[in-house]
Length: 296
Image (cartoon, rainbow, N blue to C red):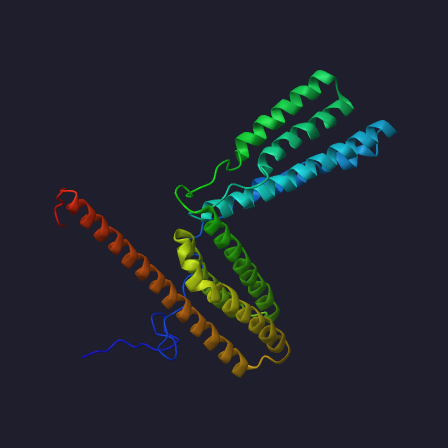
């Protein structure tokens, strides 16, 4: 009987050592909105700089002020878009402390008002300002103005989770920055795969803040160690291209990913067990009150 060939380097072959292939780092991700439209906001004010030097001193000053206001509006808009993406990615999240996109809309109107006043009438300036505010608001929308998924949840616990996840995200970002020094696309993808696994745990903890105590060591000690190991490995590998060191580092990532996955599954199992206990207690209370429930 013919047998299909398969090996470590074949398309469907298992990796060496029998370990599971790394997760796709793009699983569950969406394309960022901080792209073309936001970048255009940084380019649109540039003509003001070139035209400023062909005006009288007052026109020069006003043009540069308009340029500065519009650049500040573009920066606030980009930060607001990134903040909303972080807000949307989480099931439990607080609204951004500063409504950056709304401020960006107002500053866009203010910048266009000043730019229009340089070469036109007050009426034209007002029209430009109103159009700028409306078009900016239409293009980027408002900031999230309310907390999400926090009804009935202890705010003290969610604040603790938010701080812990924030610190953990800093460790992941440091890992990503460090591995770039190794100049190896395969390792970069491997680190991204581990980041995806770690963020699965973050989302699980955000769903039930009580899990933070059981997972604090993973968010702190383990990620801090992974960050430091990545930095040291990247510096060594960039100089020596040591294959043995590369293999050791990949095994470290395999172990970390396996442990994070196992802990996440355990947290989910514990949450299901807690739910079953709550349901059973509720059934017993209803039964004592004379309420009968059909068993499913």
